[in-house]
Image (cartoon, rainbow, N blue to C red; front, side, top):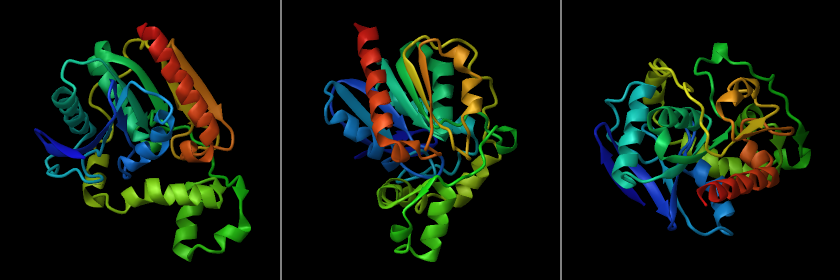
Length: 272
């Protein structure tokens, strides 16, 4: 648990383990707990990885960020963080939703230092009206369990998940809602006015091992837009998972773990 001062923010981060750095970038509104919740179980059986979980500006415990007003400046803050915490080192990135968009910005700027990339339900197209998304559809409900939730809890749960059971609720509440509740809504709305980068990304092929985990029932960012950039990731696994919405890492935990472990195996093999 520490802070890193960059030009336009003081970024909170958690730094765990030793070895090759892997930078974890959460989505828009939650905080680092989204990534640590799904990624840390993978590293209980893997050594040699230094996991760095950040809170993006306006989210979690990061502070002094009010001068930031665009995704360009969000990206700049993350790039400065990387240079401060892992200067001139090779590293791996993993991003969820908006974190996946930031990750593609990092690849555009610093591709030569990046050994691999994982994208979990990544935001591909910033403007919602331009995305190809699925209609929100609940796939499974534990009727007995949801009776225990308050009206407000149930409404939020139904709107943001496709599997409604105790396991999903407990993780969603702990890993996602907890961060959303402390996000700076006014700031986040401001940045949404300049949500897309001012420069083009995906301009060259990313030839290191990558993985895209996409929810077949994702009504937030969909899965089809990610498939449109598959040719830019020649070493990429593109997996579209049924029974998975925008919280794929919680709704399909076994497949998530298997595919992430296989990606890490490929990175280790690529390095050797």
